[in-house]
Each structure stands twice: as structure tokens, then as C-alpha cells.
Image 1: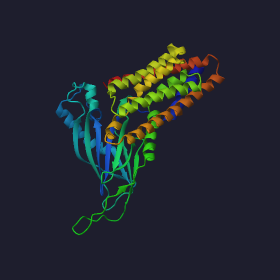
Image 2: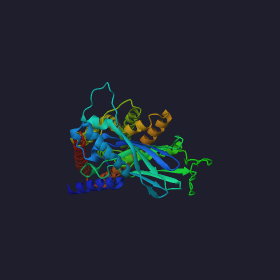
Image 3: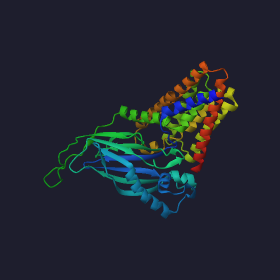
Image 4: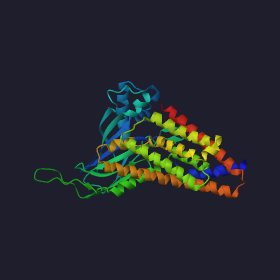
Length: 409
């Protein structure tokens, strides 16, 4: 028993070391539009009412809130957004100002009135901000970052994970670049035509200086940004990590694990696509308990029905739960790319899904390698005990996050 527990401890420590800090999925997904003008950045940031409620201390159980309460919370949240969006120009931080804010209800007037959970996720606020450049100077490089809700907890020990789908335009409102901004993934844009020379005033007889133009982002740069996001989606997401642990514990051979992970990724990619295209849309209060519940189910199957867990039936389980996991993404993506050609969306979806698959292999491979090494050096009865206790540990973790998801309803 003690030897099995030591092996299990090594396994869990290796998984933790490989992933760093863990974040809660679901994402609170925001959209962020930025325009680089001559002497400033102007931007619009969206946020769900759930984010506003968390930041402003409103109890989600009391939603929907009275209109005066919402208006006051949104007004206070405007200053919060301005303070948690981090803009750095040529290494110097810029200070933002709030220009305006607006509450938007994202629902079909003909539909039934949404319940409290749907109300929090389908009601949005938008915040218009301004970040002036230093007087007489145009920056060469702009780095956009954010730390939204990092001081709050989705559950004890687990921070919220807010993701911004970013669109950057030049002064002529032409697209410059697209990407993703998370707390640990800032986004950098280089501006052409930048100068340290004084900016001339637009007075009669003097032509106004041209606005800085950013280097147009290529498809490869956009692909790389969302590929990295897909990789981080796995490496910092408890749902993927626990699910992968459950799959690796039951796999007898590497090709079995690879096949199951590939089926999971395929299913995940299907629902990411249909969600991003707006064909399927389920609220997070349904998806998140299902994701956590899937972790518990797979882990307990390893314990209660080990023969089934190692057979072809697991293929269908992995595919089915992959469909569920994929629905936890693409809300902010759909919103920010709604007016763009299908080619843009295709690049984003392919890049994100490729990153997810790379993340699965990066985690699943080492986990299976550890188990394979234990199988070769340990006693014959050691591996079943490791599978049993490891699966129980995964089930406990899944149950904890199921409880955390149910708290948000």
C-alpha cells in the first residue's frame, strides 16, 4: 500500500510540475476591440454580468438583480476594467480612462425569460476606454495584458480564468491582428511610423501627421496565437488534466491512449466548431457541471469496471465527453469574429484544436510513461492499486470541481 501511494504521489507531482498553476474552466470569455489612433488607444471591452457580479460582490443566487443594482454595479465595474487592463507602450505603462459604458441583454425577445444562471451569462456590459500616448511621442510597440478577477476565486484554491479574444485595428479601422489575451498570455503589436519627434498640431496651413499603422498580422501569426491558446487551455485547465489522468490510468498500451486522446480531441474540435459558428449554444451552468461530472464518471469506471475502462467502450465514452468539453469554449470567439470571413474563423478553430491536441500529448505521454516505468519495475499487483487509488484521487478532484460548478448556479 505505501509503495503504491508513493508511486501515486510521484505521478501527481509530475503532473503538477508539468502544468504550473491551474485555472478554472469555464473561461469567462470577453471580447476586446482596440483601435490605434495617432495619439491614443481607444478600446471597447465586453464583460458578462457574471463577471460584474463577482468583481462587485453581488450574490449570484439573488439574480436577476433589480435594475438600479445592476446599473450601479456596471458603473463601478467600468473603473475596475480600466484598472485591470494593462497597456504598456515601449516599456512604459499607460493609464486608462473610462469614456462610456452600456448594458446589453443578449437574448431573443420572443424567448422565455432566462433563469438566474442564464441571465448572468447572457447579459453583457461594454466599456469604452481611452489610453493616451505620452505627449509628443508615438510608441513603437504596444503590449496588451489583463488581470481580470485574479484576486477572486472560482473555488477555494482555484482562481477565475478570464480570456479576452482580441481584435486590433488601425486608425482607418482596418484589421491589424487578432489573438488571445490571458493573464499569463499578453499580446504584443508593433506600430510602424512611430517616432519620438514632437507631434505637430492640426492647425490651418499645417497637415496633421499620419496616424501610426501597425504591421498587418499574417495568417501564420494569428495561427500561432490561437495554437498557443489551445496548448494553454490544456496545460492550465483542471478539467483536461484530470480527464487525461483518468484515461492514462486505464490505458494498457501507448496506442490505446493515443487513440482515445485522438477521439476526445476530435469530439472536442467538433463542438468547438459548431459553438464558434453559433449553431449550438448551451449556457455554462449546464456545461460546467457536465464537464466535472464526466471526470468523476470516467475515474469511477476505472475503479468499478476496470475491464470496461480498458476496452473499446472507453472510445465511445471519450468521444461523448469530448463533445461536452468542447462546448465550454468559443463564446467570446463567436462574438469577436461574427463579422469576419469564414477563413478567419477556420484559421482560429484549426489552430486552437491543434494546440489542444498538442497539450493532450504533452500531458498524456509523460503520464503514461510514468505508469509504464512503474509496470516494469514494480510487483505485479502494484499497477492495479495505483490505478485504483489514482482514479479515486481523480474522482475526488472531479467531485470538488463539480461542487464548485454547482455553486455558480
